[in-house]
Length: 120
Image (cartoon, rainbow, N blue to C red; front, side):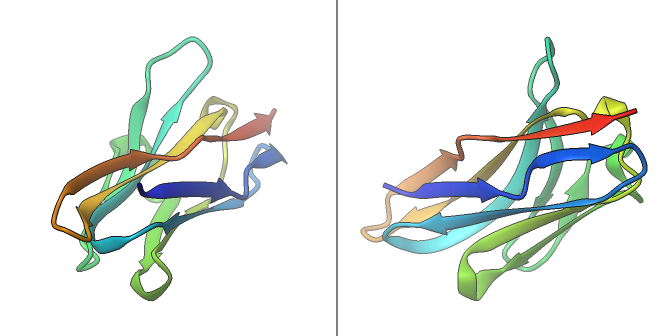
């Protein structure tokens, strides 16, 4: 089983910054894509950004220029640097990763979520 543990959420004022981290643990052969999704209050979960093992990134349009995703393959960790935060960025942020376990079985795992609250 592959576990993802997020950290770094909290309360921040509008215009401020936060950095989220997500570390994967377990018997993993390879991690392909890692990413961040979020679920605002009363809304569906939505894409924030993803990054491949080769560093190719993809962002939701509303996050481009304000959020930066990165990863450290050696640490099996993905980061999300968020700046110029707005009240509408308030959400539970979830980490996701997929790849292969030892034995070549596919995994697609989610973290437990971390709350980000932006006060206006």
